[in-house]
Image (cartoon, rainbow, N blue to C red; front, side, top):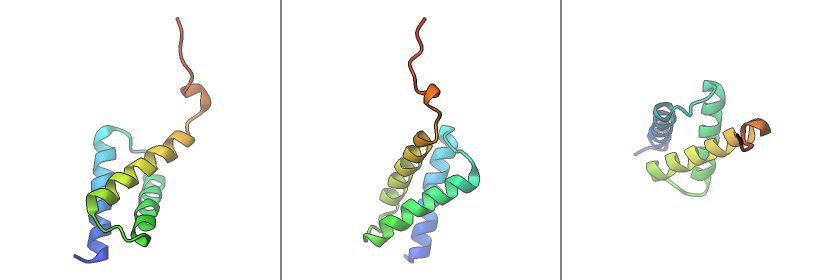
Amino acid sequence: MSIRCTVENAFFIAWSFLEQSGELGSPDETANVLLDAIEAQLRTGERRQLMLANRAIDAYRAHAEKGRPAHDCEARFG
């Protein structure tokens, strides 16, 4: 399988998961984060689609968490 097909499939898996889970944010931002994460893994030699997708999802979640306002994370009492 070509690298292009591997990237496309991994991207589609990650995108579909985020969409179904309701975590999908801005389409442009999400696409950039996912593709950057997939590209970084490819540079290290990773070629397994599910591994690429899962780590891209993790990278997106970490990115989304950083962009979250602090007041969204504080505990609510009462």
